[in-house]
Length: 366
Ligand SMILES: *Cc1c(COP(=O)(O)O)cnc(C)c1O
Image (cartoon, rainbow, N blue to C red; front, side, top):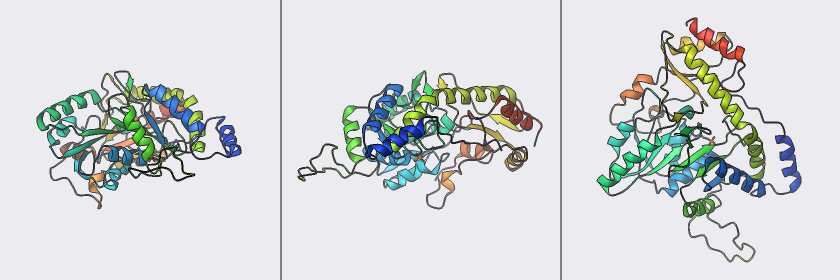
């Protein structure tokens, strides 16, 4: 089976992990700090806090944003995005999806911002970036109209390597969260990163990831105070060791995802019953996923499975789950895509023969 995801730890990771195990320091330590330094350098923003996973990062970001009221969000995402809002006591207002990109529809989002909106959650689905520059202008207008500016949280869990006009996500003044889960482009096994806009919010995030306690607090003499309670969300040395090894191979792996995507763009254009998602100049996807829209999705998945190719929907529209309130208004963009969207393997593990086999199987019909 050609899989949709593949977990392969780079050579050298085991030696780094063994060194950590021998060091006697497994919690927060020098490797986490080195990992943070390298990540900050790559993003071009030094204000980063490594965490135990991205779901923690989303919860922490929403806490920093004071988002215990109305939060605008997309239903087309992995459940971690939206359950993080619920975990922080927020109320979700669903925003429609742009059928061309499967990302949030920025026009609908602009209409739904009210004076009560505390935060706006956007997801760079499959690694395809939301136009965060346009989003900033929408928030400028909302601020001018309502006298307050909702905080933007970007779920970049799938988008390591994606860029907006050449700049990585995490440089646009928002709270950004990357996932380093085993299946993501950059992996710590499990891990995450919160990227912040300034030094002050970084200091607060670093306290809140460790119970609200300053790292250098004098806990021997109990001569310290916790002014604001926090969580147990920090990354450990084992995760950082794996992450540092992963950093050495991530660029070449993403380059292969992109090359495979370009191949499919050419080979699958015009196939009857199949639509590609939009490519927008300046918004460069890292292609963690390669989503397409197909008629008779079950037959499509079945045809590929019979040919040894894993295809998957990956997520269910979140607004349809029993634990949330459905949208008060219709979501026509979502309706147009939610039962046609499916992902085909695009990762670095596909050989030239593999991707030709996938394209040929699809072109032969289902
Ligand atoms: C993977 C993922 C998450 C959660 O990441 P973890 O690191 O596993 O917590 C959140 N949002 C999206 C869109 C994801 O794909």
